[in-house]
Image 1 (tube, rainbow, N blue to C red):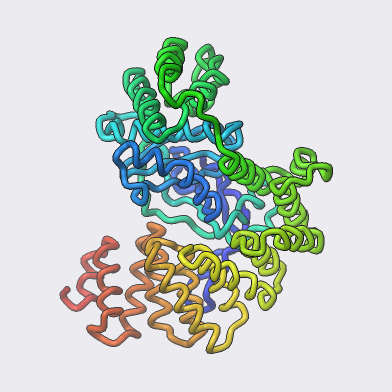
Image 2: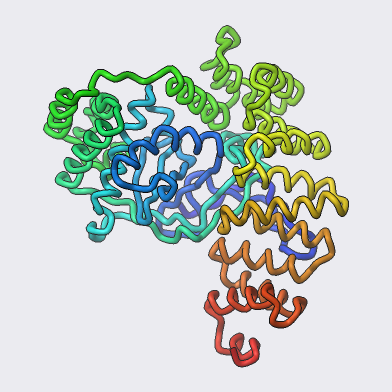
Length: 464
């Protein structure tokens, strides 16, 4: 990807972080001129659903579910892959293509087989995709921009460079077969059927006849053959849990995730066609509420969200969506109680605290700014590499007239984005304003030392 399309507003702290303006990259970024990049998105609700589905598989594989990170890629192409450090990547296109929870769980079980089998470490020079810099978002606002509604993407921020270069592997057929068999083992151990994975492979059996350019990325990196499918099917059909079907809760979660993704990714017209007014299911009304929001029919969106909240008043993600809609149309004071309620219902979700802090900073005032700082410090304890968290903290300190801490937070933001020059610049400025030898002053020094300073800059540190 060699071009960079403009998508959403990136807000900055006045006088602290240089204004960036509009930024985005739908499929990749302009920073990796020769490599295809990816755009990552964040959504607490969908991440939670994916972990609910996959954690039993991770545990069956002997992995700590809390250590495995599931990343969402905003890409309509059908693909999934694993990477070093127990990281699993899923394209939104693959999630939308799966018809049942068991199919998606099967794919995640297969990728878990690659992780647990050490195939990543053993692979040679397979193809690679540059994942840093990438894009992150608060909620799924960025997806509205990807679908052609840039005004809805106020939560868009630069992505973190901390993932660095991650290899997307072109696995050997032997490794694929091993991952298949491992997936069958994990699914059985977790009390689930392996039929979903077989169904998924069968649905794309024809991919084997295409050349690489015409295949879905998943099947370019994961060679598929009739023999492989038949070997997996034979194993699955003899397992005790082969006839286990998805439970109603799993089906509901999958339908909800599908509706939310389509609501943000597809154009409103497509969403309304796929989820017509005659469909009064919760997922369908959720999708339409998002489509109204993207269509900038704010009153319709808020009315639809309030109707959903009347049924599920303790759903933190509905409160999050309401707060997001209100905030992005400039009604921060009305957004505050919605975001506050989402945090009350889900206090351990860092992204929800970032939403609340953003609203508090926009409203301003000493008490709200102090609260915003506390919320951001708590969220950053859980996700210390969040560029958005550091950027908002920089804004809050700037609004509190604490320029040293504001510049330190800006240095942290840029460091986590992989923007080392900017990180050093902000860290040098922070050191000039912070008390010498204070923990914050030492942290600014650490950032400079970790950001590849020049010999001249090292001298400027005073001989450090």
